[in-house]
Image (tube, rainbow, N blue to C red; front, side):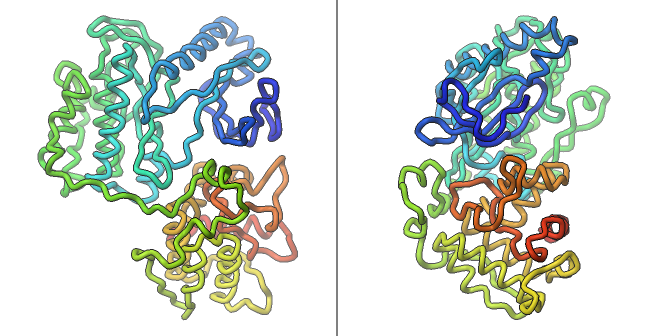
Length: 462
């Protein structure tokens, strides 16, 4: 049974908002605590308890789940996701942990391309510090990868998540571990049930993560390297990578464990951090969900700059549209008015003022230049939280299923599509929630809405 929106857990201490995702035998939900703050609830899937084929492994899964809660509780660090609580709901063990508003590094690279050296190394250093704490506790993370590193919105802070396959280790002792790998980021020893493991195991994954951040390419999987498929040096993909950084990545990803740096700190010593420019501070116009709640206000406009940012996007238009008003509304954080202005502009671009709505034909023929301008404005003034390209990424992550997409961006609640006036017009909502599709379709017919929205999300320009 999947918990529905409004489901109360642990004596009413938590209320389910929506399902976030699931993998393997686990499932995660977004919930609120009694103070109204967002938290993530992680639990086992029902099939672990009900599937007779899993009966012999049931106790192991439950023990592994309890172990994950303990590991998180032991590892207190600003760059490690923090556990809030552990409890049982019926027979299901649950972990409540902090909700991190942001995007993971896999998403960031897919959306923006390869990161600058300064940004990539900034996050890598933070995760290296987190791994040092983990290793000091006698643990290995064993699943370091871009998807498991979140970056908080509005801050240059990376957070390591997902300790589901973390294991205790004794350096240089052969141990039996569950087979669990992420191809491209896992070293060869993780493909064997019994193998020597140590800090160098996480070093490989961290170096592979840096490889991806700087090249936007998945490293050659270790099993392929075992078959003599060559690992392409990152510098060949991105010539701007220095010899020092290129060599540090390759050494951290050495195929044989004994040829790698034996600790994270030893690997970091291969870099010349003094020669790397510091990462600029991010724009400060973003406000987090919990901060918005604490302000107890219905408008966010007073918390945003009243003049456009200096680095605002180009306002180019193939249709002769003036985007100044949309820019100023977004810069002021007036999301409802900006959503209305977006609808008005898109209808005007297609010369559909008399009809007041768009269909697939108009969406498919919408000028790419104007589509990019509108998207870049939303991206810039929401710090990447809203925009057509954000929605496209989420749509692709949902397997191009529009119903699942509607659930993810919170246009669907309890199985029903929301009307425009029921949407949330502030940053206290879900990524991709805005801009909306109220300008698509006719007479509130969702079939046309969905088809038009799907057409837009397939545009190559996004």
